[in-house]
Image 1 (cartoon, one colour):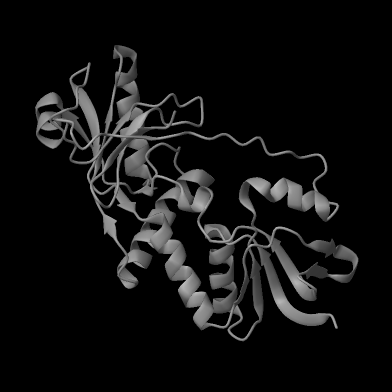
Image 2 (image 1 turned 90 degrees about the vertical axis):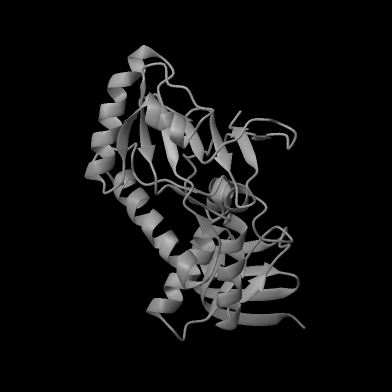
Length: 273
């Protein structure tokens, strides 16, 4: 006999977006029924659990743009969430360094953007830089310092959300590699059961276009993913880094350049490739 379950909301994808959507829905509708479907056997196996954990503070984006607002506000909300739930967070701080003479004017641009977006940023000279990051070098004699830039543990965030959602009786289905969708009847069939929903959220990250097309949506869109690898600094190395070191970025492209990342355990990584 086929089992049938009915939910107010079905969420596809148990990454940070899917879990956060569920958290918000429960705040708005405390008695709602939610089902989260994840294709992997465990959470955090893709982008949400495999990132640097750096909480950027809005330095790079022009004032009043959506990216600036989301970045600055998001960093504060994530910081608050960590403190409220006793999750690890460290304000290592970050320096942004020009690699060529032409980069120096951009320090002023980033300083202005950071200040306008509410970030704690300061232009420093090479003597101050040497005190903050002895291994760093600035070709122009100046750098930008963001002392409050922090790092969190992405998987700790995910695990905390799963625990809180489970306590609210949210239903989780992991290892859901195969399922059939029936958009006409608002139904997903998997493991011999029908899952009906009122509203469905597609939170599947880099697979969102594939999922959307199964629901006869977004045929004209295709996600082009890219991946960067990070390389860990050997424990035998004599190099020591107090915080994060970034180059002045090319503001015409959506990348921040090859930089250092320091995790909760003090391990240092270089990337992305």
